[in-house]
Length: 107
Image 1 (tube, rainbow, N blue to C red):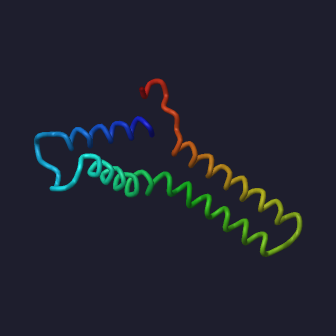
Image 2 (cartoon, one colour):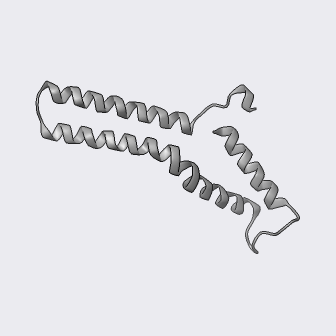
Image 3 (cartoon, rainbow, N blue to C red):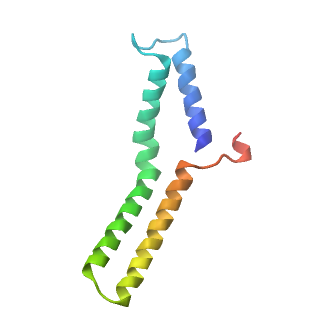
């Protein structure tokens, strides 16, 4: 993920500083690149893998709430444990996506 972000940002910086074309009047290179990044992040990366993990985590939380509200015995405890495991896995996947360390080959 980090190497992809670096590649994308480098590309936009190159475009913004290129003599071919111009930025709109009053728009700095930094603001233009930041806007490009935000659009790419929210409509590209975030709308795919990240939102999938968030959806899974939120769904597991709702399932736990529902199970706990319904009451019950040991079978409910088993289902809650299952959903909490799913929640933990979804959050771990999200953490890996957001905070992935570059591999030596990505340098």
